[in-house]
Length: 408
Ligand SMILES: Cc1cc2nc3c(=O)[nH]c(=O)nc-3n(C[C@H](O)[C@H](O)[C@H](O)COP(=O)(O)OP(=O)(O)OC[C@H]3O[C@@H](n4cnc5c(N)ncnc54)[C@H](O)[C@@H]3O)c2cc1C
Image 1 (cartoon, rainbow, N blue to C red):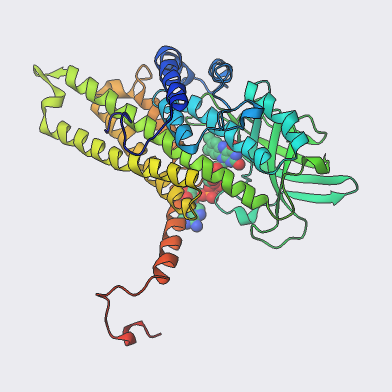
Image 2: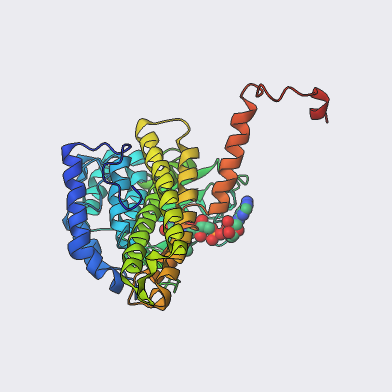
């Protein structure tokens, strides 16, 4: 149903998973929700929220059990993230960020490295950020310029990374770099786990931004930073494969964040308009308002199915999950922007105030459309994939027209 995920036919959780989710909902009601507006007022790392999520064993729910996680499925993760995002984007994104950066270590790190780093990330004692974007390579990852130069006993990394979430509170960075003199493109990328204390690595001050408060961003500068071979994640050339799985997980999770936010925005706007009276009548009695609520609710429900279906496809290991991840990410984040701003409108001037959550939702919704691949980039991915799929299908039976039409 549009206002919650209760009894959704796509969501099947076992007893342990249901108990985890129930605990998350309790935390949102009792702790995270009441503090979310103050987290959203100042762009400082939300330590209280982070410590709570770590203490509750949620921050690293996707980790294997031996390293302090519960090996959560993508479906459970999507549901947890959605529930957190109903109140606080930062809380939800802390889980996504921890999972994203650590999944590279889980997939491609040595056993020793996993044993050294993962339990500390799971307990919240340490943090790890993901450093991919550069000043001239955000959407265009083929243009990455950070170089990992082979030297005796390891590599030396030189380059600049931009917009890195949690950079100033992280102890490690998963860094994507390229081989020297490699041709443009993503085939020659390498992935490393770099210690924050490494000589030659500097982190800028936090960079002011519009929203997504509680999770500041900063830039990184690598000047001949030495990295030993045991910190390389995966073999030569698999850097992009690692980044792609990590980005896919993050994309489905960002779709779930958007879903949680817009579901909450609709709940808030509906509850507000049914109580707020103008000329002695609740605003929600007006057909114009009812239609807005109906439009938003119907579209949210359609997107909910798309997001859960993408999570299920990930858990099943479907070959076309990347396409469905892009569809879910684009639809959910674009709709979340529209729903957030329309719900703000329904609250009138109160919607514009910091006292109410909708101005925060609007600021956070905007980043959802930019991070983990912009909506435009996902359109490119979806368009290219569908064109390829259609080319491999038999010609539609109604398209029995003169072949000359297709001639060059
Ligand atoms: C708050 C925040 C947190 C972030 N956290 C991280 C992080 O932790 N780690 C990290 O590595 N990065 C992070 N990023 C970076 C983020 O992932 C990139 O900003 C994003 O991928 C977009 O890249 P860009 O800013 O370079 O935009 P550009 O690539 O410069 O794009 C600018 C505009 O052009 C459009 N565009 C570009 N190419 C095309 C095309 N081919 N077709 C149509 N339109 C196109 C884009 O959609 C966009 O609207 C963060 C950014 C922000 C703002």
